[in-house]
Image 1 (tube, one colour):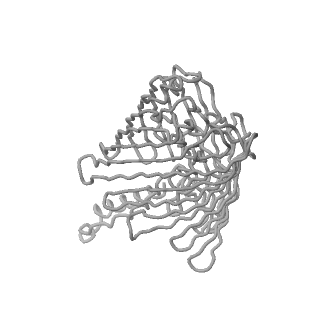
Image 2: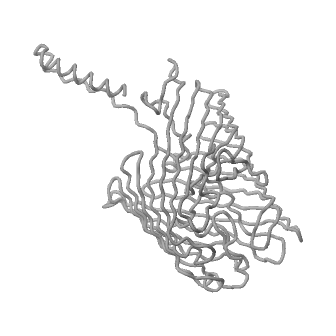
Image 3: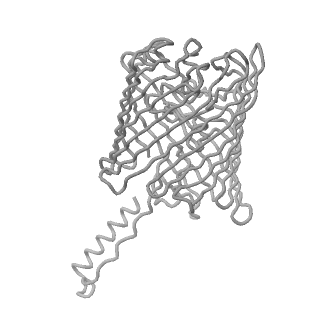
Length: 473
């Protein structure tokens, strides 16, 4: 608002000078006012956005004269309709008419000097018309999504330490293991304590926490004490290789007292070590990741060892300049499965807390016991409109293991079929961004069953439609 009044004042005084001032003044070209600083990109996390240099507004409400104390306010409002025909190939309860999601997530970000910050965010999410039943991530009438405090301590020159206790969303890498469940109606927070050390191009995070169970009422979400997560995650930039290039290295520990895999329930203690290499240069972009898991899986009848692994890739090439700036992409994943359901040893890879809708908006399958190939083509129809075509081909890695949904629950055990091919998924998606804050998207997908689906239960073709309106301020 202040910038707007400044512009009006300058225009008015310039007009007066031209009309009534001396000839020498009228001949001069007025100096235009400086452009306001660009606002940072809006991210799903929200707390990563930096409005310290923004002009006075709701995004930067100054507190005092120092300039480093301010309050930033914002909100996300999302309305989303989804329709499945023959969800999970006709298996289980069906919803013939689709369902509607709505959520609002307001937040406040308070900065007190350069070293103290408090962030709070609420979530109010509702679902209507779902004849198949409301699941926990689909509705949460009112609760705390995030509430944490940052304490930053400089350590010598070029080093800093940040401590962050409280309820927070954890999101790392490409969200293959630690994602925020953004595609669901209710994102996934953790009650956790995090410490972050930064030095030069390196950033190292260490944290311990519990995932928060989503409940449908008001102020009733609580940490799940049967699951625990602890990790050390390091990342560094490699600007000499390419734009946004870097390497991640991590260790993630996880325990679940109520784990369930195709061979039966048990208690799981799992350790994951892995690395990721990513970047972009001259139209080529890449994201390569590999990880290995080990630990203990204790069942009621026997105790077994965990030994599982995954290799993931996402490579693309953008033809720019070219009409519609096409990008050809290819994703491929190999994710291990169990090789013997008759013993307690477990080779099924656990993707822990992956991003929601891992293989597209349909989200029928999750990243467990899979081999998949995922080619895609995206087109920039206008500077605000994107169109994408994609397909996914799925196989079981092990025919002695079943298939799972995104949450890691068994859909079909798979012991009664030796078929490997699960099916083919086709997708078309259109997104139009009206402004920095508002966008609309529409997706249509179809899943054609393969031999394993045909041999193991209902095998109807699955159709999916998703339409979304998203406003973020």
